Length: 225
Image 1 (spheres, rainbow, N blue to C red):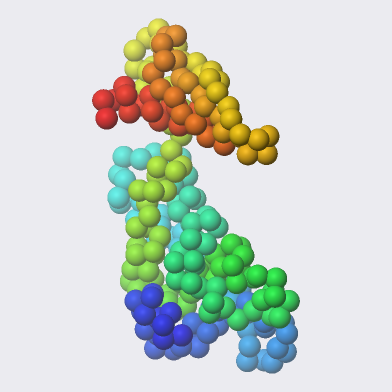
Image 2: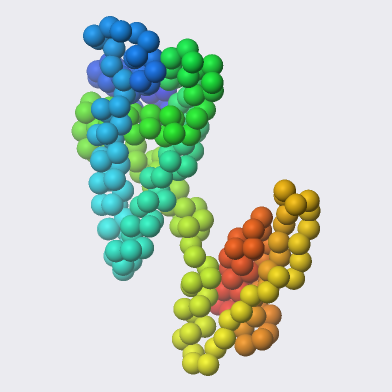
């Protein structure tokens, strides 16, 4: 527990809160004792704390972003995949109390379980130290990834379309210029054409991903980056 507290940068006054946050329902169900409760209630609270802190930060950090963009960015920051990355950074799975079946089935590495545990730990910090400490945890482990999340979630095709439409009479199209690899692991290469002239190309595991990469290359070229 002490090692985990050091990773979090927070030391609990009531360590039982942290112990509760790390207790999965499978463990609680196997130990029918009134004093052992799962982390599900903390997870419920942590989800709300995380959503509020993240929304507040995004609202003040990006004063010009419309509601739809803020909503999408928040969703990507607090999604299961993002929280599972935080859990792995903290090695949270190794601290979880799991039932025998869950532990034997690799539950300590299951994204849904460790992501829920992050929310539970956040709630424990909130209850023990207040909203300022919870905010600090969110800022350090989740909002610090905002640049990577923004880039990963950006719709390059839509932005490129908006970029070229600033002038009238512009036409965008995409075409497949190559594919390689076996059927189960193909790589596709797409080219984006502006008024019939190639302005970028990119590769990906699907045609859609390759189109996004081609659009990203085109944006960099058109914006002179």
